[in-house]
Length: 382
Ligand code: UDP
Image 1 (spheres, helix red, strand yellow):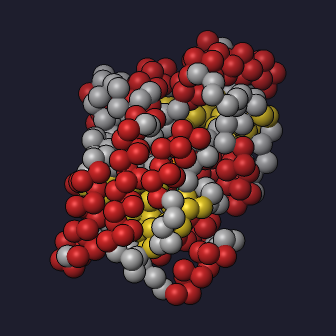
Image 2 (spheres, helix red, strand yellow; image 1 turned 60 degrees about the vertical axis):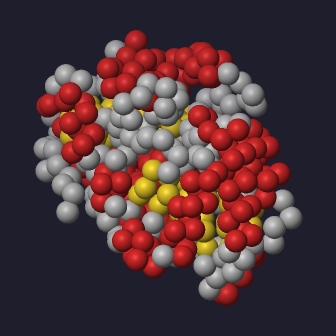
């Protein structure tokens, strides 16, 4: 009997990062894959599932506009439990740091099902930033039977918290597997305006913002900074694929209205987004995943946060933490546009997060939980 591995995911970044692992579970002769989506970012999820050819088996449909974190947690417990009982998986796999990850881990633990945590061990060191993700990660680490740490730094964070070394495998981040797989497919833009930008070869500043701790005043400041940059550099095009959350839209969009070199798009399908990252000259973001992907494409990344649980690319010099202050954003972006030396210093391609084999290492570690095969050697940064 193959071991039944249930992967639970719901947001776009989770889908991107679990997809290579689900594929590898499906291809493993002694494992059976069952997928459960929470239905949080449904449209954004569908297009990722499509790129990787994944069809979800169960949908918990927990999303509702304006619901509280506690409301969401309660729904996940309520709707996941009968699925856990029905499917009776041998292990549950979760990825990252959302509240659904924390809830799903607790739910599986209460049913005495071992939890495997992908992207384990990231820590900012500040329980309220990112909020609530830092706490979600720590909760999940306390419960997981197997920690798939992307880097040696994340493994060391877990060891410092007294988690047993033999329960940790260093795999690299599966986002790099997903990125390489997707970039290889050379998926064209569906958006006419992006096609035109590509033809014109215009320099692009790619911007994404969505983090909860930046909602409100900080995000309005980001919008004002974008306006000033657009006015200062009319030959540049600022592309802003804007998150679906109305709180994000209301904060940023009024600030950039009426500027013809700010291109606001809906969230882009992953294939288009990776194409745009590859084409961009500068990436300005508060995203976790983008912080990991853009360095491996050799793009300077300015991160609009005060701290990060992903210090590896900061140490490598391609990522810089700049906070969310309007003035600082304008200064830092301007420096990269105006100063070729500063730009060159930040635009080395580095891969501190993975080599594209994270899914293979992850699945080998999962199988070895059941005495099937051996783990692969840990990922080491080149
Ligand atoms: N992404 C995408 N389309 C977009 C913006 C981002 O496909 O319009 C991808 C991006 O490449 C990365 C992931 O979504 O893999 C990051 O998601 P997000 O920033 O929403 O979440 P975080 O990584 O901060 O949790």
